[in-house]
Amino acid sequence: MLARMKLCVITIWTILDPIYYAFTRLTYVEEKEILRVKVTKYKGRSCILADGTEIKKNDLLIKIHLHNVILLRELLRLKSETSKARLIYKHVKHALPGVANYLHNHPKKNEIKGIIGITALNKGSRRLGFESISISNKVYLWFKLMVFLPMYCMAVSNISAQSLRRQPMYLFMSKNKLFELYR
Image (cartoon, rainbow, N blue to C red; front, side, top):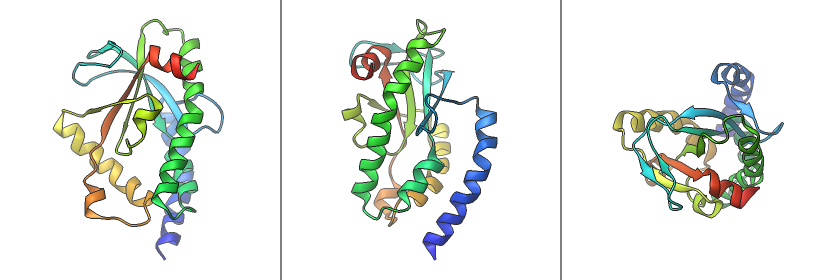
């Protein structure tokens, strides 16, 4: 019953996704990839990444978005949470060279400092080259929790109180690190 309901939600989401895509100015880095991107101005608190890159308010970054409906469709067939985590990791790792290529060819390449994502699924992100930084704005954090909750419930097999306490985090990677690892 629950699996059928999830499949119904994913079907509706699949129909609505092109409308969302049109309004968000997202771009596919490669056709049928799991990541979509857009250039954005950073609005969070300043931070310094491990390689010395300083990210400040209004710096240009490439924001990466998981293509959730494609991902959820694949996750639905998997039972193990470990298998699901591996699948997400594999997809993101496979897509990051396309992001590096997109940034390398972008007209504002010299102004863009790196990439940013927001996720509650940040386990394993360090192995991909990301640095996790907590979201300091409590209103924005609460908003992201509310947005991520339905997606999270769709992705997991069993919901626990502990798993619902996952905090969304910023994931950063400097341009230099992206090029070093994925170009």
